[in-house]
Length: 234
Ligand SMILES: Cc1cc2nc3c(=O)[nH]c(=O)nc-3n(C[C@H](O)[C@H](O)[C@H](O)COP(=O)(O)OP(=O)(O)OC[C@H]3O[C@@H](n4cnc5c(N)ncnc54)[C@H](O)[C@@H]3O)c2cc1C
Image (cartoon, rainbow, N blue to C red; front, side):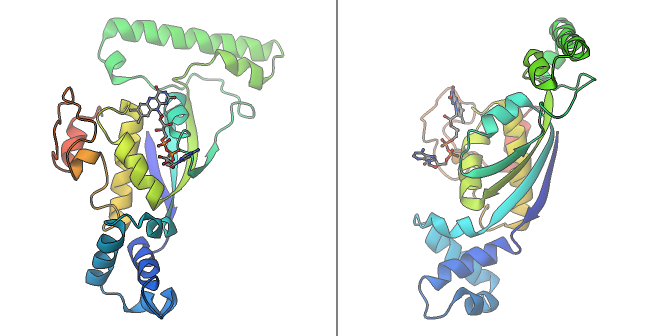
């Protein structure tokens, strides 16, 4: 899996803090933006976002490229509606060779891996035979598995990303989307450390809202990103 932050709003913390500040000032964000110290940026964001004024972080936008992920992952990803997506098309791209994601659980079991690889190769063989028989790629693809790899470009604003990270960095999220979400969060933290400071699974910043005593991290808060990664398959 490759996760690349392609572009983002320049200086996201400051832009959102200036937007927040403009709500309470006679001046506009263009003036306020210049004069904000790092300390003021932090205070403004804590004051507004911490009290439910979440729309101020919608001004920061992030575009990611996820490459070599499975269609299982993207099917879950595109359920997040406040976002824009562009996904590699199985109608217009012909997939001669089998490219697919193998779950770690399968990878770790020789018997499961044998069944998995055989089934995938058979599906791909059927795809090639259908295309060679004159069936269009858009119809031949019906035999391809959820494991088939794909590339997808995503744009989300910081508000939606915060929501996405709460759901998808949680241990209850499926391992592949969780792994992608953790990588995306790492990139977001690098460029917007204040907005994403407490982002991630809910128990990073408070008790688990689901009261899920089956979770190994219950009751939280359990710590930060690094500890989460230990529980995530490589
Ligand atoms: C662990 C886990 C298991 C899941 N299991 C299943 C499953 O078995 N089956 C299944 O179908 N899905 C499942 N999902 C997907 C889940 O139901 C959501 O579709 C997905 O997580 C997108 O999140 P969302 O709807 O909160 O938000 P987004 O689409 O990201 O939207 C963000 C927020 O905007 C608001 N919003 C957006 N659109 C509307 C709207 N039309 N009306 C009102 N408010 C809106 C809501 O507040 C929403 O939380 C699962 C998700 C997780 C994390």
